[in-house]
Length: 254
Image (cartoon, rainbow, N blue to C red; front, side, top):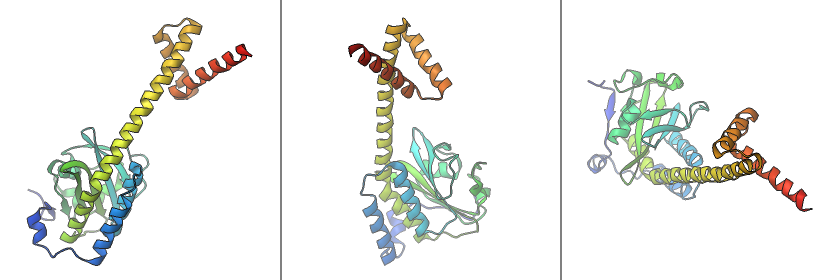
């Protein structure tokens, strides 16, 4: 049985209608600012950094994390507090911890105190915030599809109001499509980079095969070994081989 301080809230039409109509001027201003800002096509981490700033200004908190759903896992992509060692590295399975529960059920969870005692909670040694008292986790969706999860944490007990939960959930709806678009652009960029690297490495292999009588495998292993020894990427080493070949050709034709 889960503690009384834990609440799972589904942002359904019925629950929204049961509350006071959200027409507070400050709320409208915030949502308008978000809508205006996310209209620009920015890189993923810039989008997420902006979302962290928005969320942290709406609900004053000690910590704010954004996990992005990527290849069947939740990856920590942005943080209010500096975590260079774990951002882009820490991953969660869907269903793992409170964050994973929110991802699996696509519903917010609010824990007002002793969050670390919640049966769904999971501790990560890399994140000291895991000993914070209060926890709010909200799904980020795009057309009903899971895009990510926004987490807010507090050092002291904090009773998240329904207004706060609804507002963060609304932000999740607004930024979901933008985050998904930015994530796909990152994937496309990385794919293009891999294809470009492969093209350059293949060209460098051809030069080694022709000039040194190597097999294709020997040429690749040579580039790989030199890459490690010289602490250069395979692309950088391949570019150096190609440049040397072009210089040699230039001298031969002069």
